[in-house]
Length: 327
Image (tube, rainbow, N blue to C red; front, side):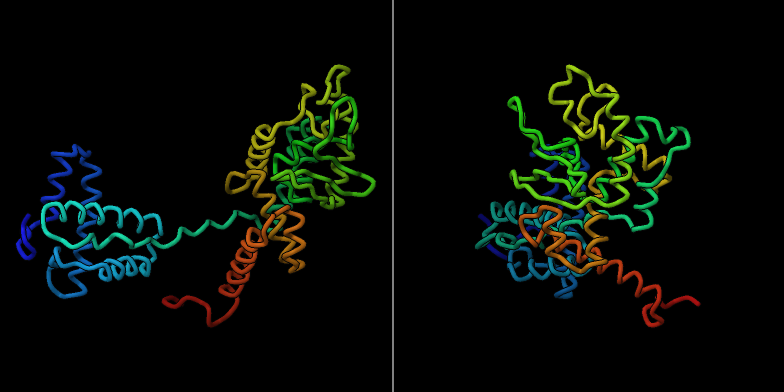
């Protein structure tokens, strides 16, 4: 083993050659390792104004380099990848030269931030759920079913699986028991969510009207031998319970027909429901209960969405918030 101070003049290139010839990594992968290692070299050079002594690099230097990448806005996934590349390099270096320990060991990348849920603005959401396809008359079975489903998704913030599980009434007969159902008289749905937790959620006027329009057409789809399918609030044209996948596909097509800028999925309506109720009420606990979240932390993400909206308003309206550089 070679003593400290006698490392080869170009250890990065030696390491990359080893990856290419011995480990048989693809040229693309080797190129990626090279970029990450040369970036580390540049960071270390900038800190000391001289080429790094690879055998003398310490953990605090690696931490500082990772922090600099984070400060530049590099995401946690990319920093984690770079640390992995650096760790492998120093692991190889320690097998070739005398190093007390791998300086990258114990250095953790920043926590991956969870992406904020995609919620639409109130105007866009209302435009979506109230959209009428001119090619389908309002009294068509397909149009009426879609209207009722999409209004209810937004009205009550349901998961798509919860919407699909809804029965017309609470049924407990012949070995069948409803998991979820609607009570039109009380204007509420009772749904069984994650972990078998049951909750009640109000249903708004627009959704109730859409469902009232749908029910006579639904009755024509119920078959004598439909069994448990006949209890479902939402049925396909074959008389079977609507599946989550079919709801997703219908909403996506409906969104395109309404001219939405991006693909729309049922969870966007759930996110929009939560965001809009929170914006209007400020009652985080109530939103938590209606969404069926076990922990308040899962609901708090919508406070970030609300802050984003306020920040956008501020940026557009406050004279001191306007970006400089142009008049």
